[in-house]
Length: 375
Image (cartoon, rainbow, N blue to C red):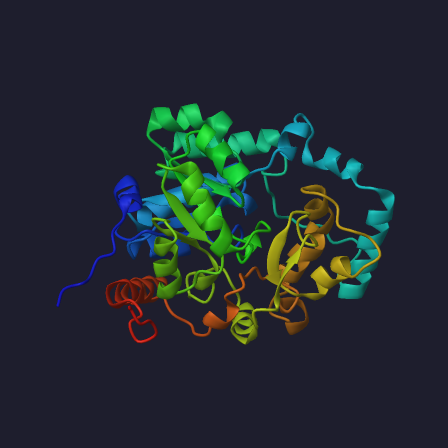
């Protein structure tokens, strides 16, 4: 028996084998994962949030060397960028209240981060000017697909249309989904509260069919707690034509994840993936760490994005630079959706996709006759 296919309109639109789109996951979805997912028949997505414009250009070139198949780049385009036009990253530090700088010093001491440590990592996506430079890199490279993990693509849409770049907008509610329709995005991701990373506040089962109905005929990919073939089949039953998944790729060898992070995901329950603003200032679901507790249970609420991330970046990066030590590895940012109990074994990206497709086809073909009686 030959390899079975699961094909939807999204496959035709993007030129892919399966309607499985890997979520951007900035910091964790680098070229090796993108290449592996695209080669396996889905859409690999580069999480651009942690790159400079130069680094993004190099990453895109690396992806193209590794695969000739379609891939995406995921950008963060929150409305707050417009409010900070003309302000560079160093000037943004001046907007951080003094009591937060004091708190940051306290956390450095608590977590063993030297007071004089400063990260050497450069990121362009803190400012409007830097973000526009990154967008221009995507346009100049004529990438196949551009996604907005946060915010809207409206202002860049004319250039995408001109170049034939497909676009993906992510909505956690009908109001945001309709904004992406207004911008003429090719695909809308309906993302439920169950999702890892930046997420909304409506459950996947509720939000997907509502967005499907609201944005017709624009195709929808479902996101949030989808980590196996049953989730893919359920998404199709809800009217979606594909899925946007991140967490199920975290245990693959291609993801930028330490073995300690993978072990913690495998050990986690569905209650361990919590909503926090303690990392970036934006609502984000990840496994609890000492850093998230310091803000979720601490004396001060988190600042907004990107000020909170700028405040915390030295501490976060110091932990990454010293991840070989358990006391720092356990503090690493570890995004994960609520399907944590389904994330229980290490597999390659190809195995993850093949297993998801085979299980989804089996569910869709056979249904659930053993548990339902038709009268």
